[in-house]
Length: 336
Image (cartoon, rainbow, N blue to C red):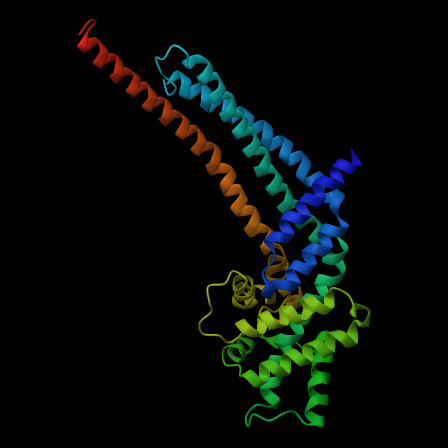
């Protein structure tokens, strides 16, 4: 039994890994690969009972629809050998609904299992919160960087760099907070040099605070998230990319994050880190699995219904042709 569970989990890992092969979203795929490699048993349990439940529900639905179609004369055909063909067709349709229901439960379980592991597992509790902090630090660096540079498209000097690092350290320590409306204004009018400055500063800050991340999955996920942020911040038009939506949703709801504490006008590092994590990072990690699972579940709904409709249509056609042949024979009559 344990080997069967592990085999099921490995099949899930293979299917979902194949679905997450977009090169530009490699960090998200790496997180999923890590989850699939280390949490096979948890995933298999989440998938197993949902597949069983889905199969039973599909079986019941298939029986109901097939018997309903039979009572409505959907499988009528006055051919003398049609009974065995009706029975075989009914069995195939019922099994198709049962299999589709099990497959629907399989993919639903995959999504819920991965979501649980992401939220409760080591990646979700140890790595991804630091990714959220990196995003918060980058936005704070944009907030501060607008005050220090880019008027002449020049680099920071040593004093300005020290001032920036000091301000970011103070923000992380809770010594000051950002004004939400001022942050919005600076994000809307950000210059490319500030984005470059903020990305580098955020990576340096996180590396200094969390040296244990060196050589882990965080080394890949943090630059990826900062790159995603850099592409969306200040952009007037964004390409139709599902990976943009969580970032844009996070930027559009900064006031919601600020409202978690006493002053809704001010945004702390803790508030912003949690906001980036829940609204952007988690959805971005889950997005490849959800997209692939949704497409598969759509097939699970359409395929058995299409099979039943085609079967009914073929029986109706065969019945009509058979009736037409009988009418022709009776009109011609014997001996003519």
